[in-house]
Length: 306
Image 1: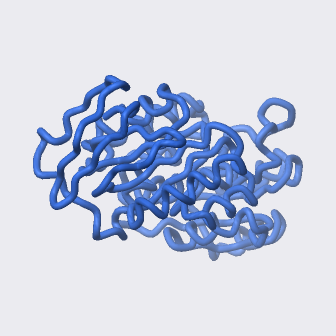
Image 2: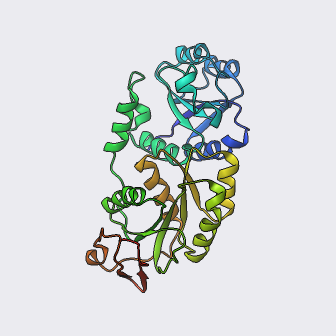
Image 3: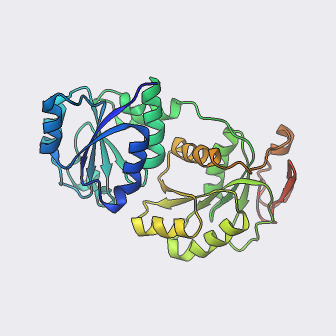
């Protein structure tokens, strides 16, 4: 497996980029440049031929398309990846986004960076290795075609809407997991949970107490929170309340399972199910059913579904 060399350009000390930069440094050989001129100095010296150029931009317009072209002219084969702050979320509609650059927001970065760099290093298909002319659709199709690691056990899904539960549950079932739906104000009469997915259907403040309670009751199962375009203070509040990780919506299924696999790799106490029969799904939201696996049993409260 080869080492991926990355030229990292921009204000990487900003708080919203801290985790993304740490993840990048763990996965690749990183050379940091404070601005484009500094980056061009590295490239012109001949000391660095990067596989990727990651450009951190907190606000639209900090770096222009001309700045990106100056970098590309030095290393035309290096893919440009934008590590973008929350202020850049509307740039595609109302601003001037860099042409032919992959856009990844800070809250999408950890799971996506881990997956794409691993695939690049192994020489397998990565959406970051596609030609610069590849469309967003082609990038998404590359991600969708990549195989995912199958798992086992029970995923507890807390969601206000059944449609959201079913979307997540369908993805989990395809990967070998059983699922159970929890709604607010229903006690989680569940044992042996492998992990928890907590979908924020409303505001963070209004549901934070529910997350904290659920994380405590189902500990040590790791909890992944799903938020619509989270801000840094929201992410920090959710982590402080007991979430092990935060993912943003809209969500790539590959990002979800990358994060889940990473958490479960550090979690040795989750239950193993005895066989496929215990993972049968019942889509009726009006019935309850015991879940038996290993030494633990889980009961779905009335009004939930398996």
